[in-house]
Image 1 (cartoon, rainbow, N blue to C red):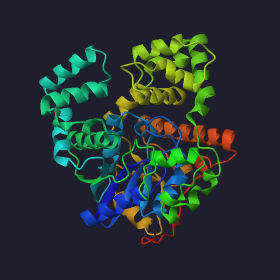
Image 2: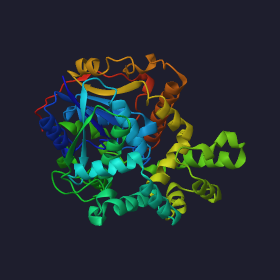
Image 3: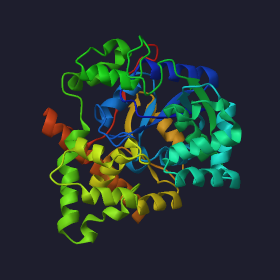
Length: 415
């Protein structure tokens, strides 16, 4: 048996995802597909439009066989951390031979060239990179300029598109880790991740969420079988990062009034000295959007800022990331949803001493301090999200420790 792995957010699962899944299965001839999906918070550090179990449920109805959670430390990390963690876990799964991902440009050869440079970091790349960093460019922009200097400007804007960036991060991780996975790229047909305009049957998740904020129906853009799980959220306001304000500000208040070891802001993952200094200078009280505006600089992307703000709340530290890479990315796969045939697949892919599938959450006992810390962060993120949803939408979600998953009846031919 052979399976495809897909790394995703499914925020929400839409027609483009269904297309990507179908094309990947056809190209590979694989027997099914497994997803590693971001949990309740996205890579930008913002709350997802629906909780992870709802989104995973919809994805299985849309054709996935099994959906596991990508641990929060990777799911809310930079593209490098996102790719490293996801590829590291996916590579441990037995019988998962392919990694499929969407791209804005069908340029696998180019992406291999770029990933070779980023994985090996030759001297000419490092020299050019440091030159642009010294001039105040953000790391992503400096890296893009360095690669263009080496490979030529004919690359155009291909290296600045979100899905292309993630594709390259996967290829870099696969090369560094000597992964068994074989890449399958599927060109997006929805205008790209950043496109916030509805483009017909295939529209991006960004455009769909934008439409939802404007009280437009999003049902035409989702597979029909995937709509029902979202119904409880479609009638409510879209979760807003502004809801994090009191949690963030409480940490800033601690930082200014209590011993440094309590706030520990300087050790937060993705924090920089410049960013920390700006955080400590901002007048209180403050709202989330004011924090964003105050912290944005020429060499600091908004995505990094929003990630850092979430990491402050969750207490995710740089040392957590270092331990993750040193300890093989984790020993567990948190099960979120599976098809009626999924139990058999789970047994095949997890028949390994290096992986434990968590279904009955209260029964999981981490084997060491690192995995206990990883699981602690995941549970904390779930409890935070559940509190946000309860406070603002009056929806009471299940506690992580009371959740377990049963196979869903599906019709793989459904539209």
